[in-house]
Image (tube, rainbow, N blue to C red):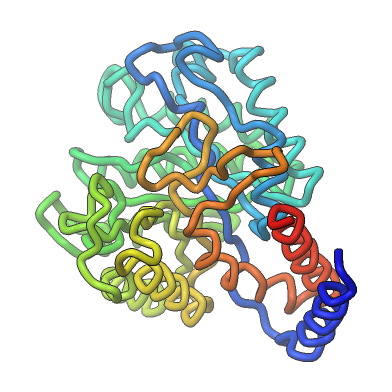
Length: 371
């Protein structure tokens, strides 16, 4: 590093220490690391062929970028090969290895059964998959991670096409089982209708989440509601389209008000902006708007995870996976530059020196790549 870079880094350190905020912003900020949910038409499938898990190198990359949580989607059918059966040994070893390494690096892991409230295509709460089976799965998983405060329990990815009341019953059964297993971990609870923030109070899918999900019962009172929010016309996340530069904050506003009015907390489990829209469209503005909105409402928002990183995405429009990971020519995706200013406040509030050192490490990484 040149003496000018060193001087600049020292100035940056002084600036961060001088302006460290005494209050925390967003507690959890990170990324979905996809792969273990892939190959859903091949269940259980073959590890390494139909699906994979995040690598330690990926965890290090996102940690060094400044993120402190990864959401790990996986398939229930792989981890528990039959209802009421034990957890599959090799599969649990793979998942546990990711959790163990991430925790050792100070990164929390949000476990995400990516099943849409189904098991082998059968709806939770049906005769084929009773609520008790869902509770049994979570009881077994909770026992394994009850002593690890860096593990968050995401009950289910995007329940849909079911009565909202049926989903609430399933969620409460799982919560009761988790607490009965002695686990006090933070639980993230989605709603019905793909848990869209924008549709939380709508009735087109049945009784609104805003009405039914107030019936959540958690003896430990350590939960948040997980929602997802995409920025394209139908909010599906199937297009790089962005409706407007402020669509993110607009679509989160009603849900945020609901959280505040009811004394709840929220977690944005999925959102995305395509790399191609950064600098060449309104992606920068839209992503910045959404993240700034979460920062400004951190009294009710506990965190967020961008969709998505993961080793098998290739040039998927929303990928956050760096090009040439671990190589001298490793290159961040364009979204990272917009995201990074929103990663510093929480650690700076608690340990400003450590936050500044982390920021200096990011600077050094960029300089090494630019040589």
